[in-house]
Image (cartoon, rainbow, N blue to C red; front, side, top):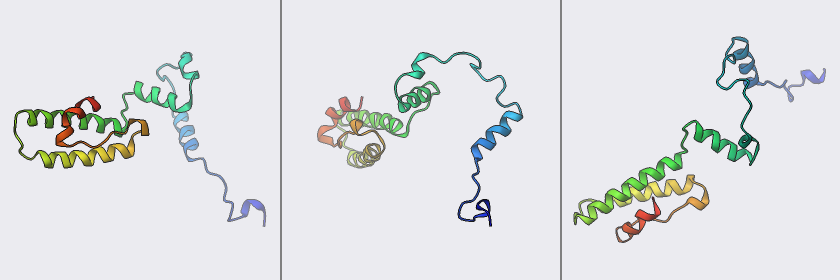
Length: 131
């Protein structure tokens, strides 16, 4: 029995590499935007995460926590506007739902971006925190 027949060490399969090779054979890599042009120097500075953020931003990608941040900001503004109009209809229920979103946001965003809970008593101050 040779080492290549060993069931504990099966041969290595590069699935993504195989897919890319097949795609290239079919001409999928021909005429790509920016092909043959040099990369800008900003792609060579900083770390890998910064590169990912830049490329993702250029492509229009928004992380989940950023979408949540925008939803929470809009809800804080809506609750504050209703409270200013002296309408207390279902504000506590809206605050409870908002608190759930804030918890989800805090679990998924970078630690420095985490924010505290919102209540009816601090809704005006929350507007500045969520801008």
